[in-house]
Picture 1 (cartoon, helix red, strand yellow):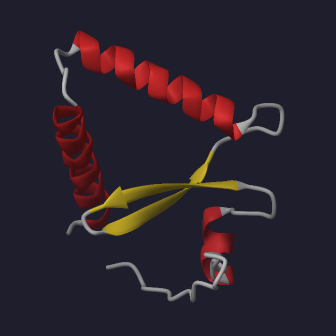
Picture 2 (cartoon, rainbow, N blue to C red; picture 1 turned 120 degrees about the horizontal axis):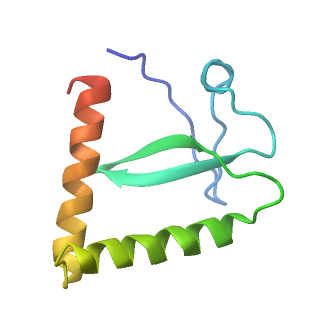
Length: 99
């Protein structure tokens, strides 16, 4: 099981990622971090966004792509999509961390 690291959240909602995690994940100043709700917590991962591309543009494209894929898959309700995303997140987490 992976080691647990604690980070304190400030009044502004900021936190510092411990140095050992930053080094092991290759996170450097100016990098973007993707945050996803998962099973009552937050899954954090380094996001691959180049300086030439704005994070907002990447997110907008991702949302549009997911919407098209959902419609093609017959998903019409937000609840159906939420359940599908949560299931995929749960499977990914279990595959990576065995929990």
